[in-house]
Image 1 (cartoon, rainbow, N blue to C red):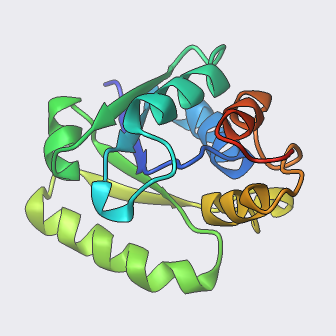
Image 2: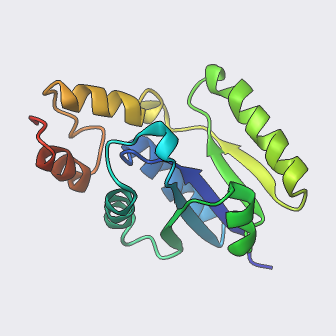
Length: 161
């Protein structure tokens, strides 16, 4: 039986922390779908198409990883992909309560899909997309926290890197 995992998020932008998690997950699951949420309520810095393009470039070369944008309810998207797992990252204890609520709601909405939590590597545990954007928008160098394609996208929208 093939196990498909959906790794959802806004990925605004995709960071080395996300990359670490996807690379490790690709060894655990037959297929990993990086599911980029449209999520206009968060007013992302990058549009959905840009976020999908960046993530696609970042994950090129990992054969069992694909990138998709979505705007549906997560469990509906996971069902459409025949996924049995929703993958979530936990950077700190402070993430746990919110992630537990999401996992419980998703289990109520679709009991056949399990949520699996992974923790980041120690060297990426402090990286968040919000922090990367903040540093970049104030002219800081984020090249050690994101893929070069993301650095280029940040530069193209007027940040000083």
